Image (cartoon, rainbow, N blue to C red; front, side, top):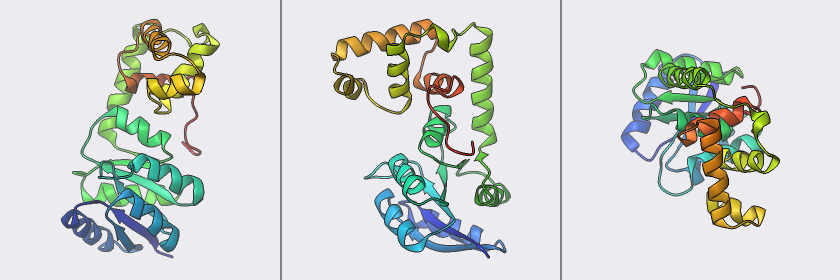
Length: 218
């Protein structure tokens, strides 16, 4: 059985080019295309592709939300994010959204084909460039003495979990029944205590300390 793929991107020329690359490979079939995240959900439900290759930044519904819905509501469907961003924060957000792959748009064709095959077989595929940056960042923070998760209070663990899951300070305040200033204070204390300087580091920490869960099979 061929690997059935759905291509999701708001640029027609990119979709056409990607389709040619995929269909030149034996055992891979492009069963459809979508122009945005909302259409991706609809066409995934109808076409039931094995792999959804989706651009990370499109107008309308968030690609991350589409990935969450696809992987949650349609078991067996795998999502690969396509991006120009060599950014560990995007990588972590993609994993948190249930994606199985993250590949740069300028990757050579054999690497893209390999990613599709890996993800279809239930494995993860992460861009080597971005994964390398993530590992370097973790090593840097490890040598600088980042505090352990056990030093966090229950409230701090609650706040870091919600931040890592993508909630804003305002949303966290509403959910927990706290003032925005109080949540901002918790966030500041967390960053200082853990020697963390951006959201990518915060999400990495939360995953490694099992404060938030990696997608199944990660």
